[in-house]
Picture 1 (cartoon, helix red, strand yellow):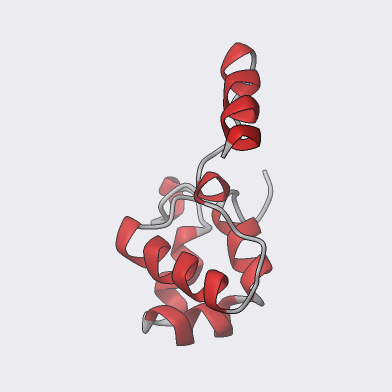
Picture 2 (cartoon, one colour):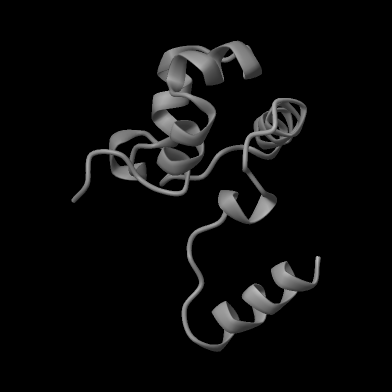
Length: 91
């Protein structure tokens, strides 16, 4: 298993890493790393809490960082992926 889980790993990387995310959210580095850990290790299985996600999206928008709400969700497989792509293209 990968050490850090998506989508948290990818989102945090896009924003510049855990230190930057700590500044954006005001959360401790320990908390930020837990978002990337599996639940079996006390983490959130790659899920970032909604309030923190909103702060991260606002920061990304203000700083022209390519980050969208869809980045906070695990990849979708099959027909749902096609529907999501169409919705994103239409937005």
